[in-house]
Image (tube, rainbow over all chains, first blue to last red; front, side, top):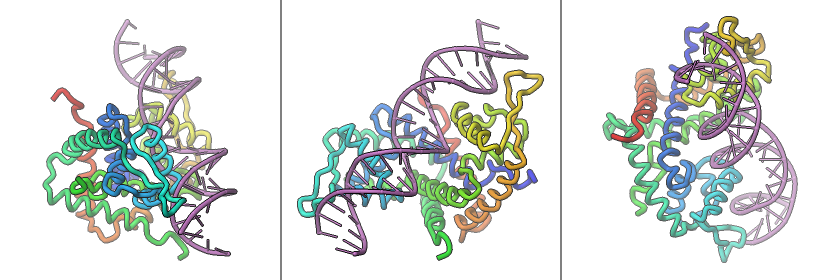
Length: 149
Length: 149
DNA sequence: CGGATATCAGATAAACTGATATGA
DNA sequence: CTCATATCAGTTAATCTGATATCC
């Protein structure tokens, strides 16, 4: 039974290893800037869409609101973003980058670009495109019918 | 500045989303069996190579010995594997699955197979092969020279 | 002593579920 | 009342770094 059991050959395992390596490389590169990989993603998302709520960020990242609030709270504590209550909708808090947040994001973009380049070394743009689409499809496929309707 | 900043388009982000979705799906499927995705990987590795040490498992998974010991300790606590000191090398502890561990692994293999099939739905064997190789190469590329050119 | 192995101790971000308050 | 948003409280597995002890 140790024939098809080689976990290191399984796509899912390699997916995990690749993601682990990516996160490790990003964490190392982002350490100086003082942000983690997930935090970087949130900073970039807030920069792309200022005024976004935590709930919306959570939906975009497919995590629970509580999880996203943890990440956002860390960023707020570090002074990289602020959240102001929406005047019209008292309950919603809209996130925006601070000056320090924007500066950090700038540096992070550069650092991450290097990591990305290293990871994709040897692959053509077309291959990367296909790969990216395949990964997105993996996630879609996995998020389908959970059970028993 | 919101042109090339769309994080959701970035390969690394999609890699993370795919891995997150995979882990979530696996955790859900493995919940009944009482193991997590990383624990499943360790059980499979121990099954493939009985007598393996925690340090060797850590190297195979590219994590620190401490991290692997945490996972192994949890599995030992659950009674899914045992660790016996090597008679010749007093310091080394060799892991082996218990009867319950083997039973859990059997069930886990089946459950994970379903998840895998769902994730890869629509992809040919050749495509999966290429994808898998690409992911392995990503990890390799990222684990190369840290700096110093 | 050096190298590999195992652990203890401690820290942290990230993820979850559950419960709750509030506003539209 | 219902839905979405935010948040408090508590839990957990998985990561890390640092320090130690134990073998060969």
